[in-house]
Image (cartoon, rainbow, N blue to C red):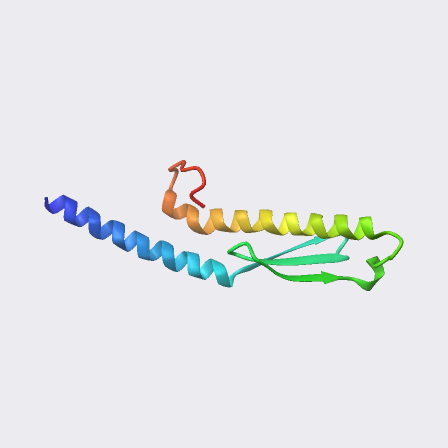
Length: 103
């Protein structure tokens, strides 16, 4: 019974640490660019796009498709970087436990 109480305390402590780490992730940002820096997307650690910057040089009314492709590429790269950030920050809590969809 004593071990069970100790284990519960450890789990509660780990849960608090995970919640703190998740809150800290919200404050972190990643940046991705496309088109040689013509489009920049900034995303937060909780997978929210917080900024999109588009160079005036890439805005061509006759070639909207290229602009859309650059925005998509930068956005997808930013979200990929967020996934890597989450894995880096939260992976220490899972330590090899392969739990699909956990983070």
